[in-house]
Image (tube, rainbow, N blue to C red; front, side):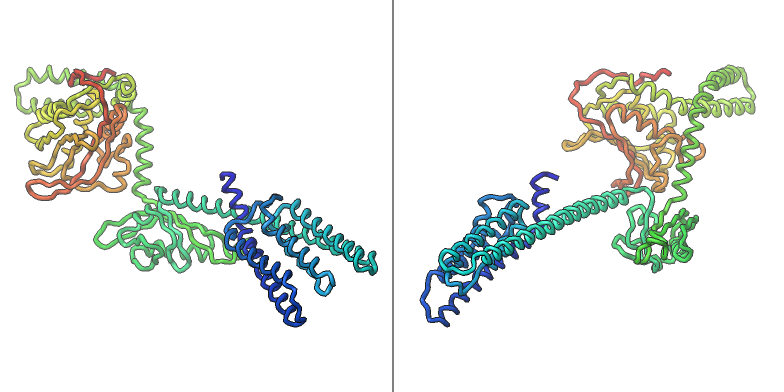
Length: 565
């Protein structure tokens, strides 16, 4: 906290007291004016000097109340206290001097400036003000002794006792004010800490991947983060609070919460929630109570139930990913070892096929070739991880014409199976150049096209490869297919290694795409996108690569460079 802000915060509790003292001064001034008028009316006297002084004091107090009521003065002694404490002491001393006959005694009013100094000022200001008042009392006792006679010792003793009382009052009042200041500052710090903690907790709740619900004994949800609302399904309300009992699908959650309150113990269970027209969703629920009712030191208010909600499918997918990642490290070494015997088998089969004439034998040879190719692809996918990690730091980027490169890859990809690999190529990047390695870009495109081919429909425009070069955005390319939407648990792990929704896939293609894009400063992402086609608006899955901006000149890059292990 800056020094000026800290000082303002420390003086804030005294702003109301400062206004109260200013108002009290105005009331004292009004009382003095009325007293002077009443005295003149009863005694038929025409002493205008005390009345004039009282009227001037009233005007001064009103002006100070209007002008300086916003911010209390600095507590240190200084001339800034003259319009308040200084004026009060001067007025009281002058009024006492004008009433020499002793008919009226104004010394009791010295308590107002002493209280103001003790509450709003430092201890030095408080004691200094009290010392000045005590000296004035002693001086007044001397004045009376010189001009009025009487018992001087008694007057001095009375002045000393009054001054001593003022000193005690000033000291005690200042200590109480200091205590108020320290407690107010502690409360301010606690309030700031609580506000910070609340903001951090809200931020953590908003970005927590697991669902969190906070509900009471009646099942009313007081707090729910976005992940919890997503897992609860379409009946979940974004406006809080809402009742779990309002949806039949949430009955297992309500029962688990009631069990937690009844047993005053944490609960955990795997439940299924079923919304009408949807497939069941498996959830793992864990509950805790904010405190145990009746326990020593427990708060008097009713405890709340904190419920953590986990998607079982995502947990299983994460566990499967971890297992596959561990197996992948081992399988990479195995794949490297079996690649050479596999190549020998494929070569021997090709030589054998040249001498075969029987159709049955040829069919068997073809089956061997197909399965050998499949094994080669699997081993290559596993080894790609090591290749990418090795080459990613050593392969330089080159400037490529995006449209020409995409068209070349598209033609090569289609040539392997023209009957099945149908789609549309939309080139809108013009002469735009991107900074990327040619072979790396080919690998990214082939992986995305193979992935789209696996899930696309049967229409001629079910698969699209498009490029773009907008004036106000990054150059990019997109592979779109009209496949079914991805499950949320699958979408979260799309670019993780060894993660796949199919048992026959290695789960490495999209991971390699992301690694290659990151190597060249590009980004890759997935989104559900709708395309306007000849058959109307069609929703599909889109994988978009956005290239980084560059000012490098175009370079020659071969599209057929290979990565060597």
